[in-house]
Image (cartoon, rainbow, N blue to C red; front, side, top):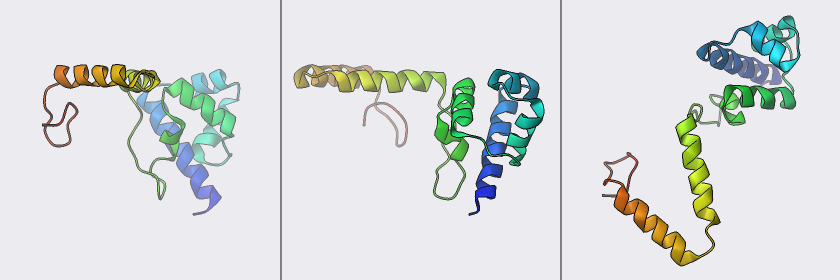
Length: 127
């Protein structure tokens, strides 16, 4: 895959997400401190998006940086995390931070009791 193909892909992913969030090119360009022309060239793959700019766009769009690479060969497409999923990530990190193994086990047991058995592929405790 050529570098140009990757730049075009990144630009398309930025465009898709921008449109899904109903951001205008002008508003996003202003937020990033670039001209609308420059931003249009990012979306068209004509100009390379720097790592810093892509990082700032990811923050504004509330997605992980990997979102923009999804769909490239070797990269799975999961879509952006929803805000509710971020709380799951935060809670998982909190669970990992529990140093006492017995306390962690007790919290996991509570979660298992509080969630219904799951069907194949659905969240919840195993059936």
